[in-house]
Amino acid sequence: MSTAYLIKNARVLGGEPADLLVRDGEIAAIGPDLDAADAQVIDARGLIALPGLVDLHTHLREPGREDAETVESGTRAAAKGGYTAVHAMANTDPVADTAGVVEQVWRLGREAGYCDVQPVGAVTVGLKGQQLAELGAMADSAAGVRVFSDDGHCVSDAVIMRRALEYVKAFDGVVAQHAQEPRLTEGAQMNEGEMSAALGMRGWPAVAEEAIIARDVLLAQHVGSRLHVCHVSTAGSVEIIRWAKSKGCRVTAEVTPHHLLLSDELAASYDPIYKVNPPLRTADDVTALRHALADGTIDIVATDHAPHPVEAKETEWAVAAMGMIGLETALSVVQEAMVETDLLDWAGVAERMSFAPARIGRLTGQGRPLEAGSPANITLYDPSPRRAVDPTAMASKSRNTPYAGLELPGRVVATFLRGRPTVLEGKLQ
Image 1 (cartoon, rainbow, N blue to C red):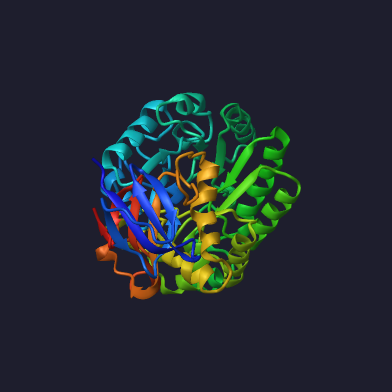
Image 2 (cartoon, rainbow, N blue to C red):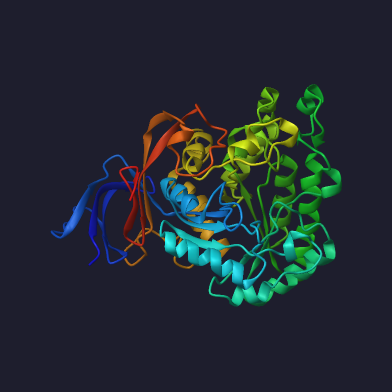
């Protein structure tokens, strides 16, 4: 028999304190002064209750790169970050471009049990951009794939991209594009601008991202399909997406925590911990991204959690892998960049980190309001403490966090997946 929990005096979405009774995987009741003799009481005074977070962009590396991350270790990290569902990107080895591979990832997530793992299917075979993958078979599989992406590679061929957008309409899928014109970024190491010139590194121009987004919103409008733009990083991209939405294009977009907080000036350290794709941009871009997330032009925050083994990052910048881990720090970074700057309240955080990503990914059991009858996917968060980020305390197998030693606010106290605590008092269960 499952344990019942009575969460007392939690500030639901940052509002007035209320009690939540969790029983049989659901929120059984919510209101003031609840009582249940059979329930384990959790004192949530001072804590914020959020719906379980949903990440639309996570790299779990399994199968093939278990030295960097596994489905189990990655979902443990997700639970510690307050997540109850993650979308696992397709750039595994073998690539998740068949029903068999996406079902393997989905089953590994079910076995681990820390959060729901929804596989993302590749758009093209082997991520090579030449031939559409088995989109329909992945959609019809046990994994029920609805998001397709060659993330790490751009679907740069306009004909292939159009066909993918047309194909996914049949089952209400979405193509999530990694917007990077490859010919404009050959050998690029960091954002193209004053810093790249000063450091003598080959630059990654903003137009390489913006040109693909402009093309793809027009394609999506032409075929009437859903497009999602991964890890938006420039002010110009924001303006294109804002224009596309004003014209009725079915486009959504995400921003990563690191693009909300960090800028290309950090590359002056030559520390590859700051090497990421797309690159860290200028302070002006950071400001534009924050305001776009606040006004809804950018729909969601997605971590782009990209674990790498130590040897892939502790090397010279030019040969270092691109990517940062982010599941365990995302909520703290969003608090720092958006809540403490008064750009978002906690209800706005819930929309951008739970409700909207669940809608985009078509996860019917996630991103639900905290109300009686909803699945008990709940995150309890204490916004008051500030702490220095300690990579050695993380659940991820990798340590490539750009926030090591940086003081960030808040901590996840508890995470409930359908009424079962995966994290309680900050510790994995």
